[in-house]
Amino acid sequence: MTIFKEKLDEETITTAEAKEILAEIEAERADDEERDLRYELARAIEHANRFALLDGEESRELVEELVELEKVDETTAIKIADLLPEDRTELRSVFAQERYSLSGDELDDILDVVAKYA
Image (tube, rainbow, N blue to C red):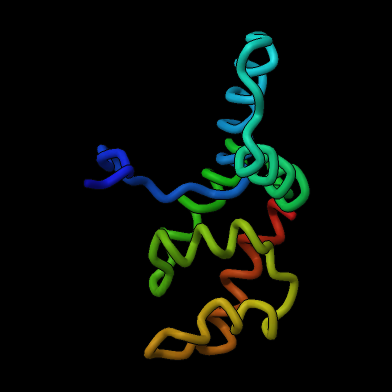
């Protein structure tokens, strides 16, 4: 017997997008006096509020713009949108586990896109 619910769908989103979703849930729970905010939900809301630097729409635009670059996939673009690296060293840490390394020009192209939103 399992206590877990069935996973219906999975989508990777930015922290800013998660913040907007969590704000809606928080508002729904605030309207209903009988429903409390569980500890996990309250911590998730606190985390999203602290670390989401852009709004949801801006972060999605940034991800879409980064995915257009040659060596950036969606998962990496989401990490970049969440972190908003300011220099090559910070950006290299995002690509540290990849099997390839980026040239200085490729890193600068990514940083130029990020600078538009930071």
